[in-house]
Length: 298
Image (tube, rainbow, N blue to C red; front, top):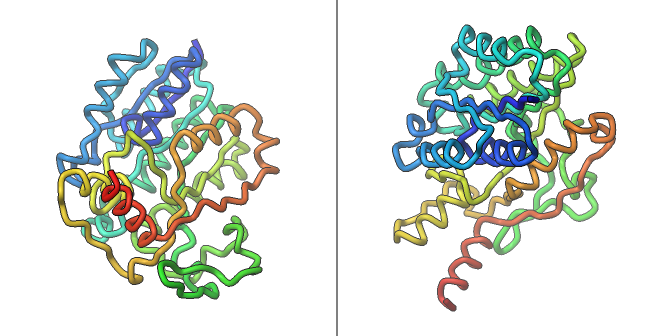
């Protein structure tokens, strides 16, 4: 049976990936040790999602492995050698603020963990597509240098600017402040690219923005939309950090991202020529106002 290896399989993107491929008749090997609970506390734990996958997906195998453990990762890949159809790497430490508290853990999870997976793939399934969920934070503060207009509820780029439809991969990632999280993801992003160019492996980096969906275990430091709704439900104050609350985020629903992954895995050459022009951008203050109106009218 063909196998898909998914890291971060209990998380937002990983769990949806596992469901999609399992429903398609493939064996899914999930790797997730619930470090999200260590990062953000018990309320951010993904164990319930893991339990749901184990219970409901017949062809799902779960492994409580740490991607920093190169020996264990290599052994798992070797166990499934000859059947691995693709690798989808979604595991990460995802918070700017948390990374500053513990740079060593952040870097070893994001960069070293990615290196371990790439090496395991190169040794055991070099022809299998390797999908990496990177981040738009690899661009650092560079987008903030663009000509932005301050409107009543949001910051918006000047009309007609070349980046108005979205920022392409041609934007430089150099000479900018990334945050330590951004720096560790840059390292991983470049490694994934390099294994593709140097070793000829079919690798891809998907630089996501604000991904969301029903499986998101939102916390104050990560997953703002899920966390915002949680605050509304339980009556917890929601704090806004910086930019007058006018920062604009490109919320992207998880199932769309999985569709991107599946499309790329099935036809790499076709996907390489595709660049979607995202226009679903919302200011944080606008989101808050819409939610408050909805609650008031309910």
